[in-house]
Every structure is written in structure tokens, then in C-alpha cells.
Image (tube, rainbow over all chains, first blue to last red; front, side):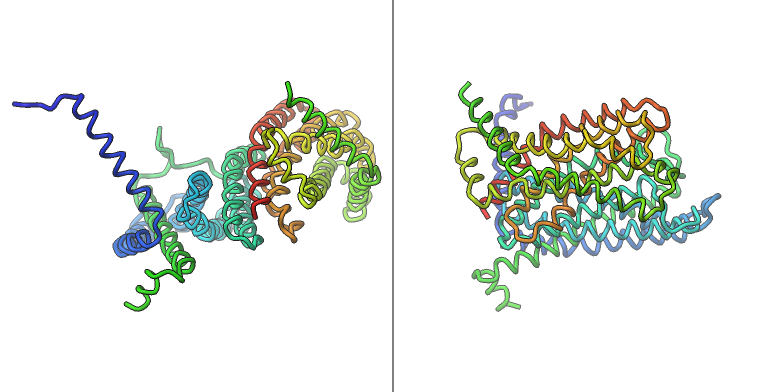
Length: 265
Length: 225
């Protein structure tokens, strides 16, 4: 039997992978390619995300036992927690896209960054509203100046700041670069803000999902929650791509491929 | 070192420009004093109430004064083309913005920190907390000057920057406010305030190390647009 030597594998495989990655990277910079591929991805990702959401919601809302202390009111967790998790993750997605657009001057990355801001802001808002609704039966008040609520409110202001800065510039190329700088400054600051607000005051129940060590949430409640988080991430990706497609069409409206697309439809 | 003269000249220029109109320095202090007067008028003159809120009031007013002062940091140099010259100069922009930050901190932050015990006295802050107030303002205003300068550099090319800079930098000022007023509060209640001051000092180090990167990038974007 013949086994290819390790040196053969080491010399060949990485160069093929690197070449494929570079091709992929260059394709990412091409608006028509991105438009087509995102259309194909959306065609299956959107139904999959909606299916996961429906299954996760039904599972969580109908088939789990009520909490022994909070009764049925805890079930809002299946909207609140996924929205909050994805809102925070969305800021990092926005900042990473901003960094890519600053470093490699990639047009598609700054479209992604700008598409992420309103979606993230909307999710932050949903997390705040559902948190407030959850707070009424649990704490007896609509609004508590607690560490996590305050942090989410600050996150909303960070998102709105990026959007306001983009609107203020007339030169949209400079606008997206300025937004990328602001998003990166925010990325350095978010852990500091979170930690400081955490020290400032804490009334919220301590984090109940831990991937290391014992979790204080029952597995029967945890699995639908994890499914809902996955569904929210998938929906975030769908909204991001749908947003990007509109911006691509708008920016490329004078090019041949968009004209052809319009004629075909 | 050839660059040393450059930075010394820059610093001298910045200080001379600011000190040429001493009234402007007093304007910041006057603003501070005026807003302090608003609080007894709004909250009532009882020394207990004022004394209880004094750490927060003093810090919030200092934050607002800093935000208003930092807004014009690059404006005139941006308009007369001096910033373009800095971009073309062989010295890295990362270091060339330091004289701006240092001047802003000396003439707004340090000055305010030095006179702040006077305003603390007016609000009924215990004498024992004056040291913590001045020290926390000294460190915190440095952090706020750097963070504010990022906002100023991002909005310097815009006509309607005033409201926008407040929206951009206020979230970043919040940790400074938390630890700054925390230090004063700790001193009022008789707890050791040095952990808060140490955290402020750590934030100052981080801001001075990383802030100029963002300021330089933002100034380049503003000049390009």
C-alpha cells in the first residue's frame, strides 16, 4: 500500500486552500457575484430560519413546564434572550466588517457594516422592550436601573451614534470610513462599559446560562432557548443580506448587470 | 532627536493660541459655575439634599463642560489648513495629536480640577472628599479629553457637528463618570477611594495609548472628505 508522505501533503494542500480562499475573497468584492450568491443563500436560509423560529417558539411557549417561581411569565425569555444575544453579537459583526473595509478598502464590507447597524439597533430595542415587559410581573416595575438594562440602553445609543454619523456626512465614502472608526472605538469600549456598569450596580439575576460548569437553567428550558438563539442569528443574517442586496442594487443602478437584471424580471 | 523640537514647538503653539484669549478659559469655568447654580434652584437649597447629590452633580457638570470644550479642538486648525500640514509632515500623526490633547487637558481638565473644591464647598461636599474630587477630575478629564477628541476629529468636517458629537461620545464617557463619581462617593462615606482612582488611571493609560490611533484615522478621513 502506498501512503503519500507528510511532506507531499504539507506542500500541496495549503497552497490549494490559500488559492481558493483568495479567489473567494476576491469574489466577495464583486457586487454581481455577491448579489447572486446571497439570493441563492436566502432562498434556503430564510425558510430554515423561520422554521427554526417557529419550532423553537412553539417548543418554548407550549411544551416546557412553567417556572416554579415566575410561573408562565418567564416564557418571554425565548424572545428576550435571543434578541439581546444577537444584538450584542451584531455590534461585533458590524465592527469586524468595518475593520475589513478600513484595512482592505472592500466596498462590500462597508455595505455589510451599514446594513448591520439598523438590524442591530432594532434587536437592541426589542430586547429592551421585552425586558421591560418581563420586569413588570417579576420586579413589579417597568424600568429598573440595573446593570444589564443600562448596558443594553448604552448599546442602543452606540448603534444610533453610528447611524447618525453616517447620515451627517454628505460624502458617503468618507461616511462609511468614519463609521468604521467609530464602531472600532466602540468595540474597545464595550467591555469597559459593560464591566463598569456591572460594578456600578447589580440587581439582575446572575447569568443563568454557563457553558462551563453547572447551568442553573433546566435543560428542558435550555434547548428551546438555544434553538431560538440560532434562529435569531439566522434571521439576523437574512436581514443583513436582504439589506445589503438593496444597497448593492442602489449603488450599482447605472451598471449593465443591474439593467439586465431589471429587463429579465 | 530631531522630532523633539517639533513637538515642543507644537505644544508651545497650542498653549500660546489658547492663552491668547484668557477669557475663553474663564468661560469654561463660568459655565461650570452657572450649571452648578442650577442645581440648588432645581433641587431646593437644603444642604442635606445637595450634599447627597454633590459627587454626581459635580462630575456630570465637569463631563458636560469637557464635552463643550473639546468640540472646537481641531476646528480652526482644520479650517485654516494646519491639519493638512500635519498630515503631510514627516512626524507621525499619532504623536502630532498629543500636543492638542495635552493642551486641552491642561487648560480645561487640570484647571477645573484645581478649582473644583470651591464648587464642592458650595454644594456642601464634606471637606474630606475634596482630595478625591480633585484627583478623580484630574485623571478623568484626561480620559474624557482623549475620547472627546475622537468625536471632535470625526465631526470636524461637518457643519452640524455640535449635537452629533454629544451623541457619539457620551456613551464612551459613562465608565469615566461611574468611576469618577464613585471615587468621590467613596470618600464621602469614608471608604478608601484609591481603587476608583487606580481604575481611572488605568483608563487614562489605555486612552492615551489607543486614542491617538483613532484620532489620527478620523482626522485623515475628515481631511479626505
